[in-house]
Image 1 (cartoon, helix red, strand yellow):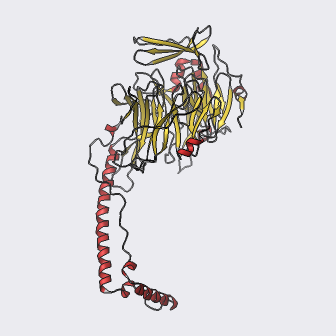
Image 2 (tube, rainbow, N blue to C red; image 1 turned 120 degrees about the vertical axis):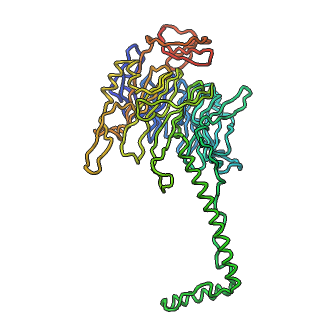
Image 3 (spheres, rainbow, N blue to C red; image 1 turned 135 degrees about the vertical axis):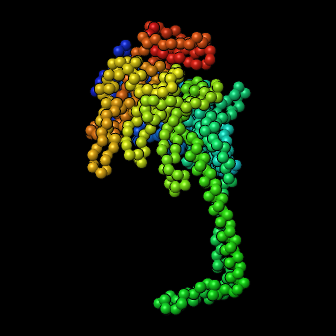
Length: 556
């Protein structure tokens, strides 16, 4: 059953309403992770539910138990949300209700939706692979068009490479997010081993046909080392002596073995070869020689193959799963790599490695791939969101269970044209200084980052807990989910909490390029287009000649 609660009641503050002066608020037991482009709807994903916050009315609505899509899974106005159930069944939440997609689940045992266009007309995801060509590939990329009445088009499969970087069937090929025009899709390939992930970009041409590129292909096997033939599974089974004996010989052997046990192990233990003829023993031994020779050859091929694969892997750059983000225009793509650099020897049984997370940028217009500098964080944030103005919202990685230090996820911003990320709080202070002060006062926390196992001493550091932040297209709404239970040393009694910062940007000037303005539209705070805006606050959306879009809040 849905539950509707007023945000103001939960937060101990007045119900949210747009005004000239906005007050930041804390959302208890809410973990912000997705936001509509207009900032009207924020989504929380916890272990149990997807929860929706209507920023204008302050209402909190528990939707259902499902997983949100990995990419831009909510439309610009927040009216449609896509994802999948824990059983890999597709989910579309449209205009306050979940659509019945049982027919799709029956057709495809696995069908997940990951993202939707801003206007809600096209959804991308992946479905069960029924192809016999690459039968080891479990799921393949697809898109579906969503009609205004809630019906869906047929599944449209996207083209993809049938072999992975090592020449084998990939495990998965799946889209992560989609551009607003529905013609550019960023996805990832998981290789046959399940070890390596790397990006794929699908584009739809003017003729309606789809093609793909692998934007980071140059980072894989940069030395162009030859890859030996994959040995596959060893086809032979060890020879069985029973197959070389007659029924009478087997019976005689069985009787001798029974007598051995009945004697209390005093009789000599019978050997099968004592019951075989010389010709039978020769035939069996010849089969053993053939088997051993084949096994030796297979082991040599296997060692050569895996040695080559390991060497290539440690020279290559692979990528963080779902660590890709694309701007709404489908022109700028940011990708977090998960790079392993050898510390010890590759010949070690378990080579020692250092893991880092460099961030790469791919320019769709020029085809140029570059790596970003990192001066502020010690390691690169994982890109989660790219705004229309080119700003990138990233979050530092969550620690693995093997890390000796546990540091909370923190959000950073890459400004347009910049080479390095800055802390999110610096950007907030620029937009709304008072909100920056509020964030510092309310979300600066002591965190237990390590424990000295010899002395038992707790190592505590102080962090401004910006968590996993999401931002509206015009920066007027910023919200970040914080995992309170995992990191805070004081018992807050909360599993999650989020901050909500809203700013009036009507007085903030923006620098526009000398590109030609080709169109301007206005939207109200519910994301509905307003043809003739009257006095009030609106979202102004300007479209320029290169296809770029600039959005800002404007008072009329």
